Length: 92
Figure 1 (cartoon, rainbow, N blue to C red):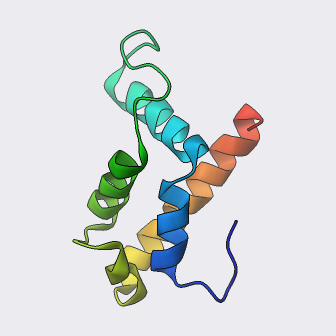
Figure 2: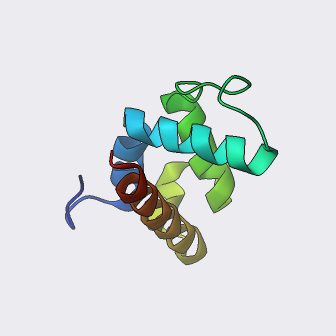
């Protein structure tokens, strides 16, 4: 999905546009809020929702801040790792 030549901001932009990342956010929201698929169906989170979620989780106002804020970058990398584990577990 990404290369070392891309900034974290670029990587985050690509990640947020992946339909599978939206599904991951749907699954996390269901788990965190104790909701069923009927209450929060797959496909609820779009690319804009994903960008908002990444910025909120990383505590930044812009994904560009990921390239200059070590704590935000570390949180973004954790999100990517969690997403990767979710994809492997679900077979996506």
